[in-house]
Image (tube, rainbow, N blue to C red):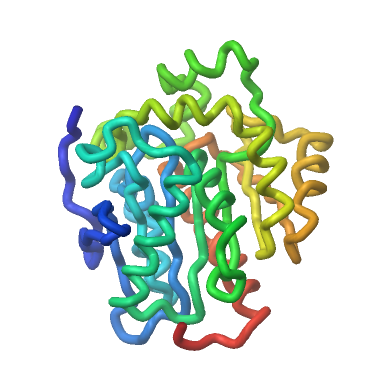
Length: 294
């Protein structure tokens, strides 16, 4: 299955990354006048693509545009099994395999581009699982922090309902009310949706147990955002207390809520607000160490 293509925002360009023999596609936006202060690596969710972070339904949606205006390089990567690598990896990869592939791709990127003070993983939904998996084994002085939306550790879906819900990419859970999104969202978003590789559906059910093991090894600041109308994940007070309580090695854990938003925050009216908050957390991470070329 292929999707229609759409021109990215001004200044955003498609690139490819060599991930130890796997070629990943990505969208890149760099600051125009100055070297980057840091590099935001954006990781999309299941059934989406890198274009999720360059929403075209309204000028305020694009994380790539906003990040570059604030002095950051923004690299939105098509995860393994999406974009250019879909043909090579039609079933996708496991989370551990994706983490290895992503680390190789980021090594390739850093060898050819200035990254500023380091890398900051900004991830949505299944991309959040990849960010957490990657951070569990990453070198702390290279990784500044994590900002994760639409991903928790306890599903709000019964275990026997999860495979069917993922297979259908349940509309209400993935989007919420239509009024949360600009009018042209569902026309323009046909260019950013993509089939969900089967290995991602297989991996979903085991995530609560996987997270429990990964959480102990994450040593960078983390911020979680849950949309007001998030329906995939439990985000009541007891669930969030358990989530943050497991991240015992992280120097800082923040949980935020995004009002007037559904699961796909970066495609909704709340996108700019969320992106500014996420980049604000990056600013706070930069205070922990001097800025400079990495």
